[in-house]
Image 1: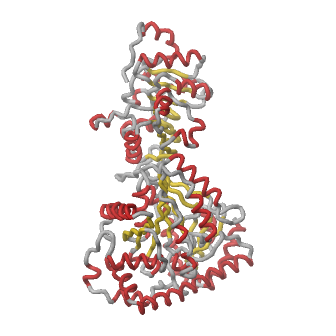
Image 2 (image 1 turned 180 degrees about the vertical axis):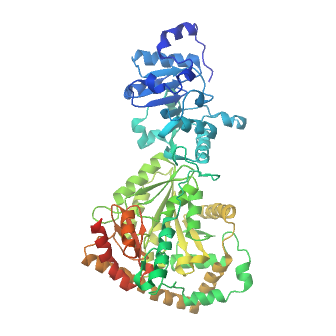
Image 3 (image 1 turned 90 degrees about the horizontal axis):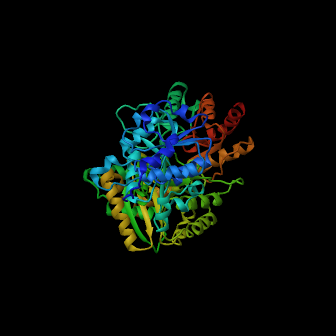
Length: 628
């Protein structure tokens, strides 16, 4: 927008010499002296007519503010506002930003505001945008360790561009909304003149707050973090490695390795269904060596639908795409039903890799409290978090891991499912929700028909809520290393089902290309042979009953020693809530008990230890807790 020229500008500027900084380079390293007793030093880049900076300085008199604006006629209005309010904690730099290193030393600022920067839409101007990665680097050079950049814009293209620049800069999006004025962040928002004008015209205001991932000055070598927090070692595999070393030294009978998410026999051997093993060994070379179609072989897709739905005849339109394991299904769901910067929602007792999968694709992560004070599924917090996220973003990928949740063994009841459906059906029609039901453990969760009673409830969801089933044949058929799964949609129209297959196939092709053909052929073979299928089902039931017996044994002994566990129904895992999971895990290792510390407790894999050990562990865990 062209600015109207103000007459006698230099003469009018003379009134504000006390709050003008013509040579900021001269104060470099001395801004704290200029700020006096102020608590923090903040800068707004492009202050415009000054409504934002004047109101912020009035609201936070304990802080010192530097307002930068290169349009001198506009800046005059900002200085007049500050002068009229009698503010002494604001100074103005009448320049455009080129190189912040010339104005500030390292760690001199506490925060930076970028309000409605020029989008500069031409590609050749990308490096001049204020959220270009080179600019972001400058900001975080001069910001303190915990300093943040808060960015607002009405321009969708600039906002999406900025998300990618933040990720490429190894920074983190701490707060995020695509509709600021409808979000909880609006409570302390100060509107700029530009913001008010374009909001009144119906434009959504977008906002993000940007912070660091790694500590200031910390280097990672040649790799880019791209918005991810990468630990030095995978926690589960590290503990499991120590458990295996202890078993080698002291013997299997003297060590409880309760870390492994696979079904083991009482002697610690991997359980593989013999009927499945026979089917694997019967494959012809072409059946495992040839490429599979991107979405999966026809036989596998038909078998996977039958296996996942358990014979339930749905009236919905089914779409299915094969993936290399359940991780692939979750990856495809997040990639295609959320946008970069969006937060994924799940329960706080969850598989930690959900967060990693989200971060790998530039998504944030949020959880709701899974249980209330009475140990029941927390529908109130579930609804609150769904509504909260849909106020700040247009799409939501919601992951519910049930039945036999990892890490708790909890399964949603049919009544709880009905309440969840009611809540999701209250989602506004202009929002999109992908409800991903991670049913990885469904065939070890109890009676195969009963654990699928919730599926008909999914048909009651309205059209803007898409139910997706992430089904792992790797676990169902005990060939974990084959990495075989499927993502299945139950759409209310053929067009949506076709779209699902198209977008997920595209993501598959560009990520892992084809899923392995061998395990797909095995699953198809099992479901094409009624006698073989009956044998597989019978054999799986035997091991499922063994797993359920282990779970009941752990529950019984926990009750005897008054050890609190998270509500358990069935599955591979039991969890014990505690304040310091890492300390408890380390203490248990002293007793040759190895389990996995989670955010809110420790996870015990009852799938990998005998019933006898399941009876011994509660007392050992109780003693360890009391000793901490």
